[in-house]
Figure 1: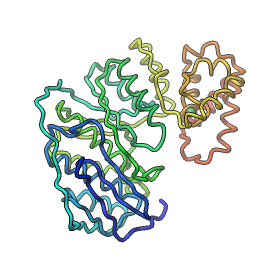
Figure 2: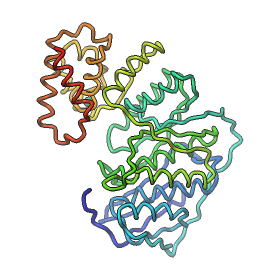
Figure 3: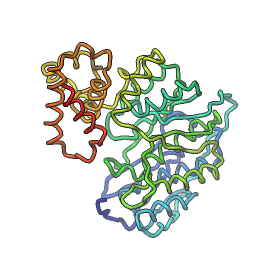
Length: 379
Ligand SMILES: [Zn+2]
């Protein structure tokens, strides 16, 4: 992991207007993290649960810096979370100091609103793995609610939010949207220090009024702390689940391991079994919206049938889109039955060529390679 340039002291201020709006200044740059929607966020959860969220938000803000002193204008509870977080990266616990001027925390007001009880909630990005998680519950006839956290990632937020909502509408799954204002500066691969813990806690707080007992998020966590980011470490999740219980939240978090190309095959099977259109609604293209059109022009030329039968929000060229195309071709998506073998050959050759230049080869899974080699042998 890259070496972190630690800071001596960082001041984090809570807004007097929104008790989930934190800001900090580093190098004269302002950073912030806030839950801006829905209003009265956290209603019907305990004050402890809301305090825990502020602490996890602090962790997300300081994660790029690990300051020795964190100064706040409000009382910080659950500092043991920060202690464990720092310890994971080999640091002494931060000293938490109160600044002279303090703001009062206003806790979300309880409502009389009655919501249907739901057993499970899924963190729903709108990408392939989160779609697969939801559909598996549909297949088994279990009730589930999807929660989308908007602006958790640096890119693709509008498309993801729109797709996630459209999916749930199409499949009849209750959907909740939580919108962040996120200028945390915590991005890239390092975001996994805290990202999924923040995500899971938002899902737990949002769905607590529905008395949800299980939160499902993407798995693939590791029991070995060495080289593992905190939110990918099973030990962090054991501690975190204990904190959820201590804070009076109804649910516990479980990671569901994602497959790779096999997942595309599974979704094709489920589309048939459930009579639903699923794949065309998936949104996980890595390209910026302005790049998609240009990339698609190439595929219109090289693999016209594949391109014609791929949804317009896919660029076709990034790792995620190639994963889709590879899975659909390999598992014989009916929508591609007219794709001639010369197009398959062209896709395979282009993907080998692309892999040679790909800057992050460790992102390409063994499953991707196995399926690509097998497809090459098939044509
Ligand atoms: Zn793409």
